[in-house]
Image (tube, rainbow, N blue to C red; front, side, top):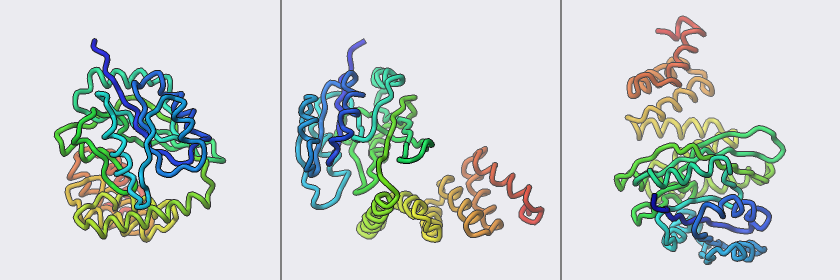
Length: 287
């Protein structure tokens, strides 16, 4: 089978302590490395160059993570794009699956399972992010912060699928540093919403940022807005129902949200689970 070529595309800033681990994890997988630097003052650029990466600088005076990502994508010459951050490493055991995705993946974007490790904790959380996709001009990131490529892939007629590939993300940020980052992201997301009222994508991340800060009233408001602007999205109704049940202690309106989610997605496991819990807690909420 013909060898499929792949470009690693990264954006970095002051990552001299971590970038080597990232590049070591992918150097046997990728055919070229594209590193976009957004203003490093340490040895990040020098280290990336030692790995043979093509390094370029990007003006980040106006914060726009998608623009920086897309600046790197435009320089990629291979058939496929692999996206990583400097604080992530590709798991060696599942790395061969990435090659299989490229051989049989067509025009799909592939989700990697990302294990998020936090300083001072032995536990981790897992989310799923699209990190491997064909190098096509239509496939570009969107969003000044929490940028994603998913929407552009779907808009161009592509599809999204799980890959079985794992990456490990290690955050060295302390609690105060994480809090400041949450606050910064919230302001950027609010700016995005004000500039593009018709784009509801930032609401997902706004709810998450508020939740991480413990501002559950504001997180619940964002979840309710999502359910309003996405009336056919079962996940939006599920999320609104969870906040109504747990934060607002309103089991009756929570039930309505879970039932709507189940109507939109018959057999929705999470919605069924919450409805069963409501049935078990009190006969009144079963009505």
